[in-house]
Amino acid sequence: MAELEQAVARRREVLIQGSDAAATAEAERACRDVEGTAAGIADALAEVERRIGATEAKIEDARITGERESAAAILERDGKAIDAAAERVRQAVAALAGAQSALAGAITPTSAPHFSRRDFHGRRDNEAPEDVAAYLTGHLIATMLPGLDVSESGRQERFGWVSPRPIEATDGETPAKTLLTDPMRDTAAQIRAGNASSDLPRFHRPEPDFKPSVPLQQVYVLKPFRYSPGENRMPEIVTTVISTIPAPVAEQAIEDGFASRDEPRNFELLREQRRSGMQGRSIYELPDLGFDLGTWVEKETARRRAAWLAEQHHEAA
Image 1 (tube, helix red, strand yellow):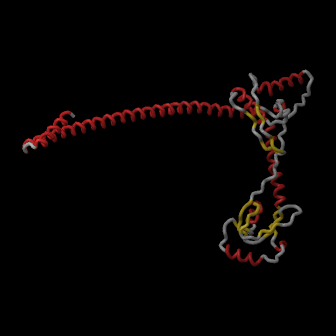
Image 2: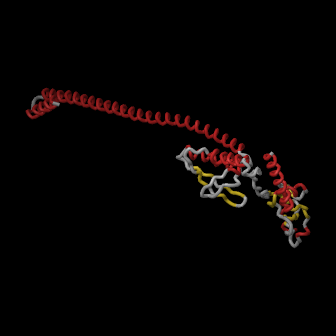
Image 3: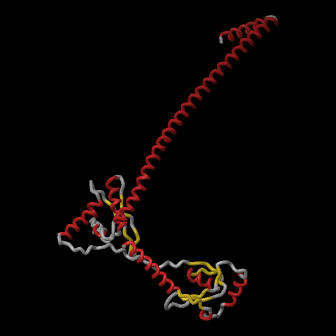
């Protein structure tokens, strides 16, 4: 500042000239006054700069906050729109599932054999009504939604694995008519004209494997015993205090008092007795439970088959 420079120069001259004390003090006071004023101005300028910086920071924060809020609002808006649209699709798919179920119900064992689609997998025959319905529905999806690859899922059948088979779209084709009901109408016309037999083919559902998978069950063996695992097989013996055996055998052993589901009070005594009491004993010395697991499997298999045949008869009626 010019005033500060002048005051300093004045004090310098007074000191060089060796002026009296009063002149020197006055020069010093003038410098201090000017220096104080300069410091105050510098401080004020610094505060102004700080406030400007704070204001700019607030402006920047507000800008960033505004950008974030705008971006968040866009995502929230889009999310709500997608949720609403996806819910409509979910409802449509639920309705489609119901419609396919009704379609499967409409395809009878008499109409199913007329599904005569030919493709590189070979002629389609002996298809179950639900499989025909699934194919027809898949065909509609493949035709109407070309962005999706649609295929029948692979499945395990009694005599092997059926690989997945793609379903190709056909422009403007209505599957139920061209793949199923048109062949039925053609056959009906041939029968009326006497050119085809009135003995209609029927879909016969192949019998599944009714043989049960025998579960296992852990029991506490109170008394050692033996049982028959099946025809022409050596008896099985059950001696270990904690044993895991076929569940039907376990239930019979519990019923007859040879075993328990719950740990017995004399558990430790039983373990000690088994360690010393089973050596050298023949399996035929053990009590026979009188249970033949092979016979149980045969009866359970026959029961399951009879129930299945009764259900098929009910559906056919």
